[in-house]
Length: 138
Image (cartoon, rainbow, N blue to C red):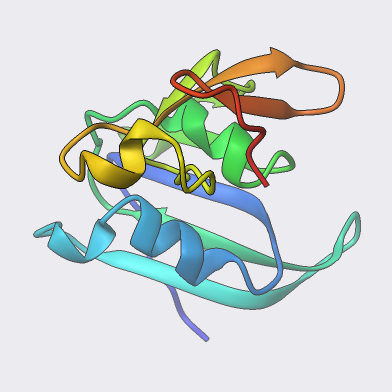
C-alpha cells in the first residue's frame, strides 16, 4: 500500500481500531477539498491495531475535542513535510453539539435549535454534564 506523504497538514494517529470513520464524520472531513487518507487496522506495537487519518491541509478547528472522542489519539501537525508539533488532546472543558442530552425533560428536547453543551465535571472519570439540566452524558 502506498500513501503519499503530506507537505502541510495533519496526521491523526493512534485512533482505536474501527473508530477512524467516526472521527472522519465527526470532523466533517468529507466537506474538505483536499486529499484525506484513512488507514484502518494498521499494525501498532503499542495498540495491536489502530486507525490513522492523514489530511493534506491545515484545518482551522479545535482538535482538542478529539480528547473526548478518543483519549488515546495523537495529533501531528506537518509543515513543509516535517512534523512541527505533536500532542495528545486534553479533555475540553466544554463541548458543543458533540453529544446530545438524553433527558427527555431537558430544554434541548423541546427547543430543537438550541446548542447541546456539556461541561466537564470530573476530569479523572471523564464525566460531562448537560449545562441546562445537569444530566450526565453517556
